Image (cartoon, rainbow, N blue to C red; front, side, top):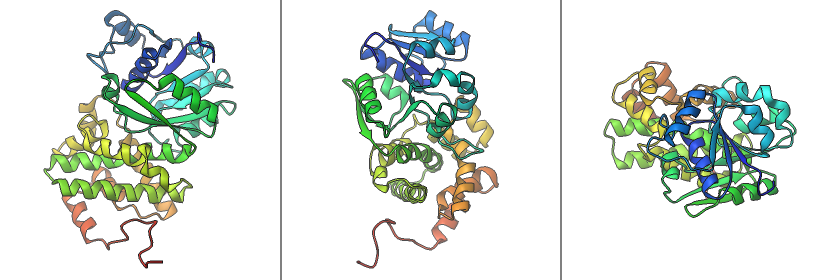
Length: 340
């Protein structure tokens, strides 16, 4: 990548906008692709993304546009910030242009039919591309407002990690590297489900002890599941595991937490999602996660409980009662209880 070459960001949502600004503030020229020409026009006119990050000025080095082919032909480093449900459909038609590109997925989701993570979909579409994953406790508005933030770029490709660190690492944004792409990406996808539960519990006035219990049991549950699929359990002690889980389960700025909060206030799922006005990936993830946990026979009582609330007409009180009646397991799966 030459100094003059622009960097592409695909996706006009809040995270794509925040990343585009960061890259621009670090001196990069950014081509910010989005599907909607009206959104492009609004950003050009107003100097901000009114739909997703109202009040945050878009940097002058960011050029919004809706020509995907032109965007890709000009760039070798591409940040993909599309919703999980739209990623394959948007990129499949330009698959030939992705060969040899450095593709960095920032989307924390799982494809419903295949149980594929976003980087695996990118591999399907563009087997000749070099692929990484960006994940961590990264609320878009805080990034855009320059709150101190850290993230993880994960890839087996060390040069890709270095290029992303060089492009993104700045005064308020710290970028760590990891070789466990699968574990980092799985942590980012799984925590969304538990944020919905945490939001529900907060809306219903449950205590700090309860939140502490939910977060730590969620960490045990998602680590247990990820290790069954081949991830490194130590990854979940880092930013993309416990770091992301804590912020998403504790913050009213988290989209998944907001959906859970609305559910806890008595709204049904459709109304809760409609009130949010943008994608909450945890809702997409819960069905596929429950099915996969059953297939692999991984014990995931919180996932089963949330599924019962969202899709089986059970109440949170009923689910919590069932959870409290369940047989206590070991606290941490990777520490033996026998002393050996």
